[in-house]
Length: 116
Image (cartoon, rainbow, N blue to C red; front, side):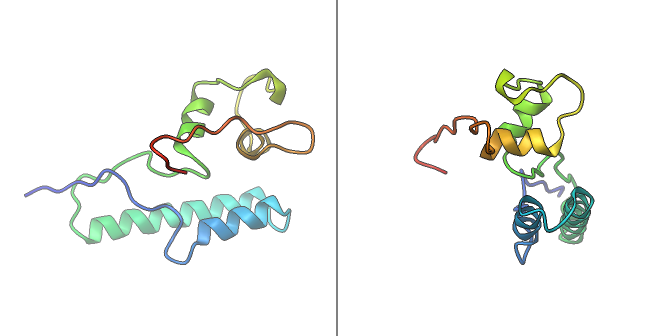
């Protein structure tokens, strides 16, 4: 019988993504360091799923922050206050949309069904 799962936790077994994000936000590591941790986690997750016999590995389950923010970014629905002029949305804009920065507030977060 073929098996499939909808998603998989993305933080890592030892919260590697959380620590990589915090290090990046604190300017203690580079974007390349963050990308490496993310790539390693995705690869590890795919191998775990394959090793567990999952035949249909889900795609696009990873996010640095939030899947709704990812979809907003993919659609280019960046509010004008972030001064995005088109093209790729870099980490500065992406995380400013999520967390705000010294000059611009974060986008509003809507809680659905009393979730975070």
